[in-house]
Length: 412
Ligand SMILES: *Cc1c(COP(=O)(O)O)cnc(C)c1O
Image (tube, rainbow, N blue to C red; front, side, top):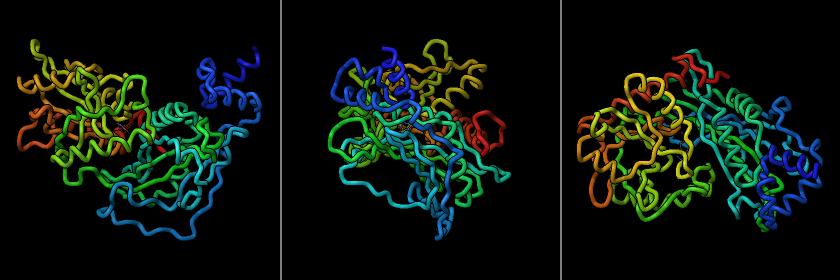
């Protein structure tokens, strides 16, 4: 019993929720148990950033002119690559030239979607120093995602250090002006060669980097959304709150349908109540005026499993509580029905709506198509962004680029 406990605890630390899986006595849990039983704790290596090996490219790429940058199309010279297996833990971290992966066609990622990822950015400040924004948040979320699909967890501090080394090596790809950054894509996949459905015995963690320009190169452009009522993205107890690759492919068709009717993104509603959840790959914020008191309220959906836990969402909430609450604002994480939003709009109490995410920081919304009506989101015809969206963008960007000294900015 004693060793049972110790082993269970150790495996949790290594990302396998064995203690939760065991009581169900599924074949998977049993196999997981047998595997953990046969491996001694001391043999499993944690990720060790000090062991980093670097192989530089012999064919450095040409730098794409900043004005020609397209999101996620060009990549830097190198990649960070770290293998893991259930017998020995994390292998030596390596920075190698950007290259194809070699996978057996039976690799479990290709059949059962053992994949999770992160999206974060590196910024060059006015002194030429490179900064990350709240990388600990991305590391925490990566571990929540990976452990949900029986992939290993990783020491977030060690991985942040390694990402820092990688970014410094490829820093010439980061254009030296405001709005430009290096988009980083940490990814973890299960690499075990088997068609059996079970916990991957081996995994690969890699990070690739793509230089990106400002999302709104010529200033904000408000978007229009279509509320999707015929498909569901996420549900309580599901995995829509994890950044798993499997969550994204099924969203493309509803997105295409919205686009065919002239809407840039679709808005996901949940349940018979039609709660507003999030947009495409952004969380959603609404600014409402109270019917009775006239108090302004910044509202976003709560973390109830139906939305992704955005780092930008958390940052907007944090800044709102710090800078808007003292001015008499209410800041709420609460459920809000699409009908409540439509009613506020018809009464002139919906002041603005915006999406939040790493790519754009904020993305203002002009209108939402809902049950054949167009819900106006409060912008004047000549306006492309509301006051709060503008403030949030400036505040967050100021921290990301180091204009404002702030604990959220991590200098490499
Ligand atoms: C990544 C993502 C977001 C935004 O998260 P950030 O950490 O703010 O970039 C929101 N919704 C979904 C579905 C996402 O995948």
